[in-house]
Length: 119
Figure 1 (cartoon, rainbow, N blue to C red):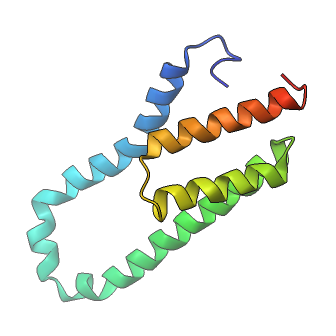
Figure 2 (figure 1 turned 90 degrees about the horizontal axis):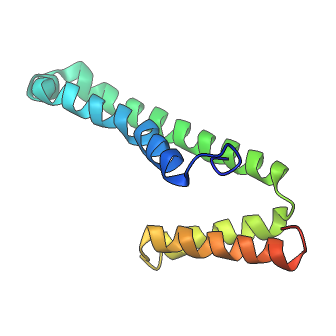
């Protein structure tokens, strides 16, 4: 998207990084001074598993939403899904370095488009 808008891809990467991580970082530093007080509250300790379940549910929902949205836009939905599963396996099970996996799968997608004559 950044390349189509005549922006350097680094601008998009930095913007995405801030959009993903800045809210969590701000929340952590905003809560840390009060953490010792919250841990003593019985109602907080009882509510914590529910907060955790809600967070996991939102993450799972966003993963499926992004996956199905990407599959609708790609020219190779089955191949893209397979590459996604391979990337997840490489990072989660094989403990490969994440930027390396993203770079490798990006190149694979690029080669597929070139082989199909779409680029």
